[in-house]
Image 1 (spheres, rainbow, N blue to C red):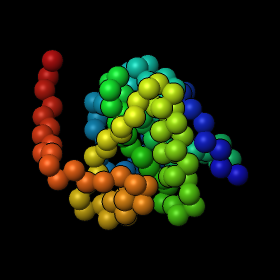
Image 2: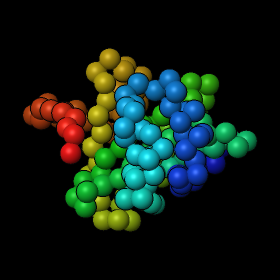
Image 3: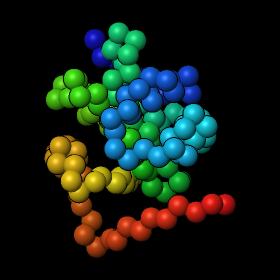
Image 4: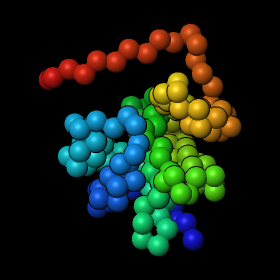
Length: 139
């Protein structure tokens, strides 16, 4: 049976294992330190899906006080199509609502057809009027 629960820093090993084939991770933010830092700022809004002690799904969710953002919504390939992604998203959205957040954004690669279909099915829309710029800087 799949159980969805709040993600904790103690989940790092299982989360990292789940992310192994996930495109879009980076060695700074998605390190044990970056993971702990993110959860420290967002302690109640990120979730894991677990089955028999194995983490089979993740959603990092946080906010800046105005907008929520989802990162690394991942379901293990052998568990896709079972509603686990939906459970994770709904859990994160409810947690964000409790913190007063009404809008959520995310970034999906254009070539991720399955992911884009999932997000469309979940009611997310593409904002053609926005242009996303990204630069990593050393502070």
